[in-house]
Length: 386
Image 1 (cartoon, rainbow, N blue to C red):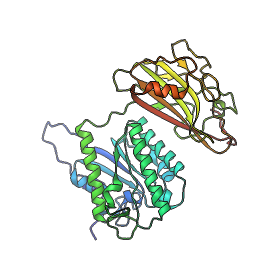
Image 2: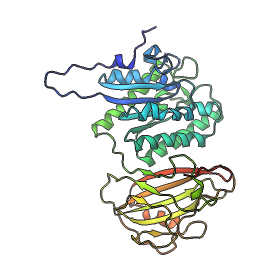
Image 3: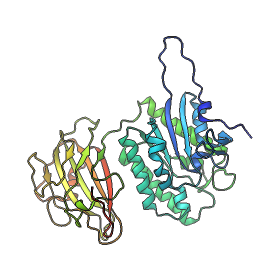
Image 4: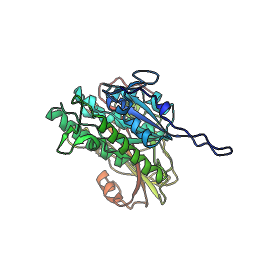
């Protein structure tokens, strides 16, 4: 068995000559479950502090550092963890250390343990958004197959990976197909090589590390990733429940929303659509607002239900048949509410009482950037007033 090596001991930092500028290593956090830790070959520093134990070649972080001794790659994998458990340590393991990149590989244990994909997707989206809002570049990675997967589990893995790739494109963040790096080309539902049918072999982990390193190489050659538009709210954080005040159970007023500047040039206006994709019969539109001036960086709380606002912003028709905001009002179960903000290269000439479909059609070809925040609501939740 090879001697266990810590991440720090793998960093081959050269001593600069006198007067030379000391360049800090590129800092990357590898966050995830067993396929980040390196199971069954290696136990990560979180599992066996302080340096980990076993054959480090069984962790993809090792191969990233082999390619780039000047990088610092922190192995923050823990065997068996679900996405919600990984999310619970996100602030400590990622935000507190402020890396340039965080590689997020999670979800296979959710599927293995029978969790719903919606919860997994919500947790992944929360981590992507939290990284972006803290100026950390998230790398979304596809979940790996495993040989013992049932057809139902294999189908869920494929579905989750389609969602991950789509969300990466929507959020304008890097995507790495780690699934493709380890799967059997003759049977994509199985690993190309595995010691026990659950995890990649050493070659698979090496392929993962080299694939990720090549992606980051490419990003760094282009100057990294510009984290553009960010949408937040002081009323609720990403993925949390929307306070009662902003629902039909309370005052039913719109929450305050804030956004950052976008790096895209040529922005002439902003538009926002709020929808509930969990409504019984169709995606339900709660708010249509557009021609928000390009100089604005917020929507104040309690926007009045008027077609035209003093700053030239306009509001359309929601699916309640009213102008302006209509708060969450789910009939049953927990619903998700998506606030999607669009940066546009023009103002829009739309007639009064335009719908979300009208707005989406008018925005075609004019979207420069976009961002979203998601809140939840159910009819029986004990909402906390903020």
